[in-house]
Length: 168
Image (cartoon, rainbow, N blue to C red; front, side, top):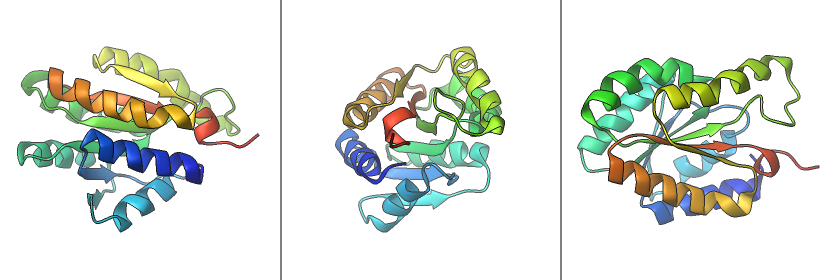
């Protein structure tokens, strides 16, 4: 993630009232994980599996936290079982912040399948989402995502791509 986009994300998370972050660092959002970990505003729990990250966020929410799970969009497939078990039946709001591998501009062949399945999977899980390609829109998207997650007691997602990731 470009540095100015990561800063916008940090500000957006704070403005949204998100105080608990879990995630599996990926190449595109590594610097965001580092900024979150260094900021005393956030409680940060890195994980080795996105499903575990979702479960940790769910537990933190039960303890009164507003949570976000930061991961690559490929991790949605790993987390899907946990999301279905925990949120579809019981109503746990976790914001998912996904780097959008396979989106327009992708440079790696292995990233293409991630882009092919992420939106249909979000739809199947009934998770409302927004794709953010402009860093200036990232703060608002995170605020709105958390507002809706809390109102509907269900996950929401922000997919991050475009000018948030690449300089052209």
